[in-house]
Length: 286
Length: 343
Image (tube, rainbow over all chains, first blue to last red; front, side):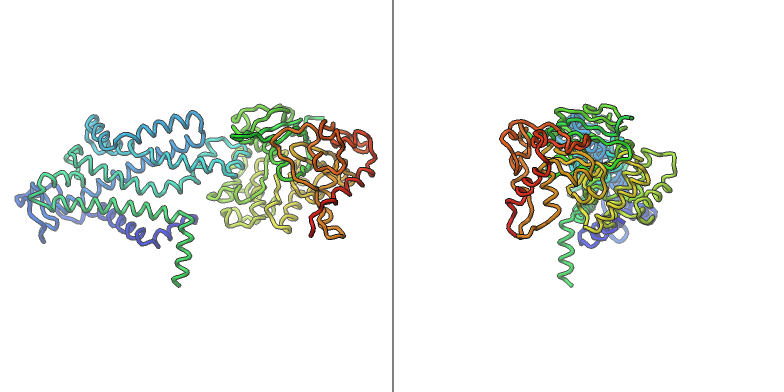
């Protein structure tokens, strides 16, 4: 009920609609694509480095593997890493930010210093260093990305919690003698979440990009096909096979762009001021 | 006689801003016993809400400081209690209804859950769902309201929901901080009637904070008149309303009774509410008082009984010096009319 209107507004917005549809299609491709495409993404063949053709739409790589099959298979990993890493980062960020903002005092100071510590670290370099230390597995990469991206959510949540916690209905909850942690959980966090919503999509975009960067540098696991790995292979054959770099590059670019646009549209849909403008504009059109 | 539910004695509260201090309460004494209806009246900034917040330990931490006096709940001194220790004292002995019903309800929670949270805390053994319906019935709302969000309700309905939330805690004292201020006149009357019904059926005590004399006169047995952070007069409501002892009370009543007099002037109290940036040495009302004497600004008048009634007390030098009440009222009346605004 409460979300129906922002949801409709999101779809009324052109970039919101386009990006939502694209992401939906991408998710479907990632889920069912490997079943539809008959080719095995790891099957090597003698037709190496063949440009796009009717038999291999996106060409083949240096080992003769079908690039379309690899791209579709890689979409699963890229999306998985993006969604899981962003989900972890958002959950940690919301909890840290909420506790810091709500309880204040030394807890706030300590948690915010920790988050600043993670925020000032040069993300890619640290990510590379950690992956090099703990090994390249998919889960490790997810963990590293999540670890480096929660501070942003934490800071936004904290700011919002600081605003919400001094609202009147929090006093009403206090007046009932309810425990503080329960007030935080039931009253404060639900009212702070809308500010965090746009960040979720941005976080996914960021995570996809970081996974691609890590794999591009060859630090991903070589048997996990991801877009970053395709770019890594493509880079080594850049002058001989442009399709190996351009196609996964464009796919990464469009996907990151789509998640960014979705994030912007979510924030516009939840912003009461822009909401008003939209309504006026529509009326003028009629 | 057992200890009163709430007993506030000579309470002093100071708000600290970055560059100045506000002495919001400068000695306020108030008692609420079982099954009583008590009214607190005063202008904006007279410290009414500060008293209510202090009684629940809800003064903004780090900004407000209790600099003197004491608060006791059921005979237990709670003056310096830490934030965590307040929690068991809120809701059950004392619950609160606030003034602006929209901002005091959580916008993303349905009504039944908001009431349910209070029930869960205080009476978890009963079926929450039935209890929500009972409470809604008690505040005369249809059961269908339970599934609504606050923004779907009218102001009067929200105020009733807030009352249901407060009553879910099964309090023995209900503090109502200007419960009718944000509502239109007809809704106000309904809420006042509801408050009275609830007070009678449940036997809870009600501490009504209002700047509306008529509401207090209608509802309350006991009454406190506040001015500039002090209680200037207290006693049985009908006693105060028929024989006001303090010139400020008299001025308030004159202003409320007749909007304009025969000359088309508004009955007002001349002057402004004094700034609370400093502590008063004498009577805080002296600067506006039509019958002020020289020593009124220098020495605080002690609480003195009015017309020989031991429970009706006002702080005014005229009473101490035994001036006749009618005499004093004549002077006060003339003064109150003196500088009315031209209509």
